Structures are given as structure tokens and as C-alpha cells.
Length: 451
Image: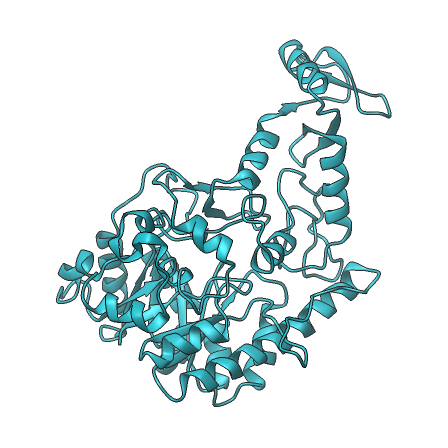
């Protein structure tokens, strides 16, 4: 069936959920991003890093990622039992994405059918997929992005292009592909953007290659007009948020129950991610703390210049910074409230946090294991110098830490909880009344009714 499980990230889809989706004759997608491995008792092996340097911890991360991806692929394959199709999802901006992808695909020959890839411009995914003779499904948010990918690389490996995933940047959960010319506060309807993508694909002789609509998909009846629309062409639908609330979903019961209670304004776009991308997440205590951290921010100078003529003594070391008169008054109010620690940002500003939060931020930055190709929070980068060359940004967070903690624990209010913007429909959909949590097969049967 042209129903696709959204891949998401760290452990949020795994072999059990994707295998069940494929066994029900859909397209199951497990996350190949730092996937779990298991011990002899079937318990997840904690991802503990022993290396003394970032580079050493990074190498540990790569090996754990490859081992975990192979593990989840085998689980998914066994559960699927030859039904449906199995895909793996990877993020191009994760650290060592090519090494991890090659390592997993080398160890999973014959187990999976395709790989989806987004979060960046995955030019080389086509070459890698063709090498292993599986299909690739790039995730894009505009026709312009696909044109660039095709011109640069995909035209050389067109036989292995299984489909193109259009992910709505205003409606999808997780990291979003909003460009600098698009307004995050002004969502555009998806139909004209998908039609533009199809026209580009037709120009390249790809008129029969499916487009997978992702982001904001809940009821198939909402998309009935698309199914025979010649301007859209062959279309499938990806569900990212709805599969979270199933029995096979690996997220905690606390997370599932929280999703069932969300309102329309509980999921928001933000730009706190260390990737630099916009992302959509539940506006819980974790996001609120980042918002407040960002608001306790003023520009500074190291010497009196222009309006920055008011000396301000900052922090326990008594550093003297120069602020505007108004900012100095605000900063003093924050200090009086207990936000006594100033932390410099890469933008010649300082934020004010508690001493406890400052220790946490510095510890997280020091413990960096290099999980991204470039991280603004820790200044790690996958290059010979292992650095972006910029000052670490205390306005962000360690994404590896918070995602590992939310998937392996019950602390949903004080960790990053990615979610699509349709999540409020759990509370409105009668299918989930009285807290009902379906099996994956029950969900797919329900989807095929249009609901």
C-alpha cells in the first residue's frame, strides 16, 4: 500500500515499529540515526562514551551507529516476514553520515529495500544507494531543492530513484526545510508546491516516479482530490505523527499519553536546534526554558562605545562589560532574580542563566561526541580540526543527549519532544477516544477507510 511510516530520528522508529508496518503491507521505515543495539537479555545497550577527546568519542559514536542500524534492520526484516517494504531513514547532517550509511548497508544486504534521507542536501545518497542496489528517496521541501540535487548528482543514478518525499516545512515534525526566503509564520498550501515539484520531475523524465506527501497527513480523505490529480501524478502518503501512538511504537507511555492531550497551539516552529535548521516540537518546559534563555539576552561591548557606555560587572570573576543604559537595568533585574551567570554567544551578545544551568551547558559542551556534521552548540564539526571555528553557542542544546533521554526515559516535559503540527488531532479523533492505543495493523486498517 502507498502508506509510508515516517522515519524520524534516534530510536523513535525502530525495527519493531517498522517491521509491524511492513507486515501490515505498508512501507515501514526505521531510523538509522544512532539506533539501539541490545544485550543478551534484550535490553538496550547504553550509549556511553569512554574516549577522552571529542574525536575519540566521535569514533565510538560511528561504530555504535553502524551496529545499531544493522540490529534494527534485522529485527524489522524478521517481523515483516516478507510483507510490505522496509526503508531506513538517515539524516544527511548527522556526523559521518556517509560512513554510517555505508557501514549499515554493507551489513544489511538483502534486508531492506530503500533509504530515505533529508536534513540537508544529500547529493551522494544516490551514488551510495546505487552501489548497494537499493532505492533512494530524497526528502525535499521545494522543487528548487530537487532541481539542485538532480543537476548535481541524481541524473547519473536515475534508475534507483524510488520516489521523492515532499516534506511540508510548516507542518512536518522534527527538522524542517524552510529556506531564508520563506516566512515561518506564513504557511503556504502544499498543493502548488507539489505541483511545481512534479513539473520539474516531468522535465527530467520522472513523470511516473512517485511523490510521497509528508507533513500534516492525518486522514486520507483530506487528500482525496490528490489521488487522481494529473498535476500531482503518482502519489503516496507518509505518516510521521500518527504511528507514534501505537502499541509497537518505541516511545514511552508517558510520551504517548502527552500526545493524546495536545492542543492546536502546543506544537511550534523554533530555531534553537544546534543544526541551525528550523524544527517543530512540543512547546514544553524544555522549549520554554530555551525561549526564556534567549530573551535574557543583550548586546555588549568590551569598551565604552556609542550607546554601550554603561559599565556592568558580570559574573563571579567581575568582568566589566559595556551595555546600553536600558540593557544594564534589565541585566541587573535578571541577576537579582538569580540568573547570575553571563554566557557569551557568537553574536557579541550575552545571555543570563543560573549558575546550575551554566554548569550544565558547559558540561554538555565538554562531553560532545560529535553527533552532527556541524554543531553550533558545541562548535564540533566533521573536519580535520574538529571545529566550526566559531564560539560555542549557549542558546542551543546537546541534541544527542536530550533525544537519548526522551526515548529511553519518561521525562517528556523537560526534554526535546519533536512533533508534527497535526498532533492536536489525537485529541479530536474519535479513534483515540478513552486513551485507545491501536496496534500498527489496526492503524493501517483505519487509514484505509479514509479516517
